[in-house]
Amino acid sequence: MDVLKVFVENLCGKFNNDDQINNELSNGEVLHPKASHINGVCNHKIKNLPENFKGYFVIEESYYEQGNRKNILPHLFLFTLNDDNKVVLESYELPKGVSQEEFRNDNESLVMDYNELAKSEKFTPMVYNEENGVFTGESTSMFSPVTKFILKERVENGMLYVSEVFYKGDKKTFGFEDPIVYKKIN
Image: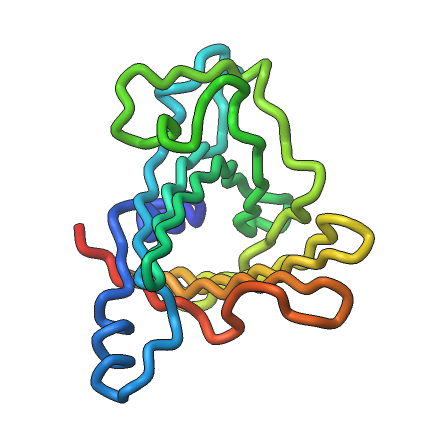
């Protein structure tokens, strides 16, 4: 079984948390933002990839709505296997000269150069453990001496569970410890 391929197939597609929002509405309190992810492998958009490259670069488009506020947060991730055959997520900076609005899977004119891609210096790579087709991972990153970012994910057939929390000192400044629950819609 190709663990990395199975992981990427579970991760990629269009997802939203409509079911979670509808449940929260029926319980009388909406706790999470309305959110969607569009995840797609983008190796074909990257020139100068090394021959026999074994990883998958993925564009993650994240869209959030809460009240009147809408937020777009695109990311470029690289997924590879480590020596223990575990999936590793590394975060990359968006390419220079590309706006957040342009950094989309459906942008036919988006081309990146592998030699110009830069790993995020702030993000601590996340290693996923796999058990019975369910992948779980956690990463703690220090974005500044006082700003901590904790990411927890669970990826399984048709579902993503994502908890992202920022702390300044010991105070939570943004995010949700209780994960946003995304369901694949295609």
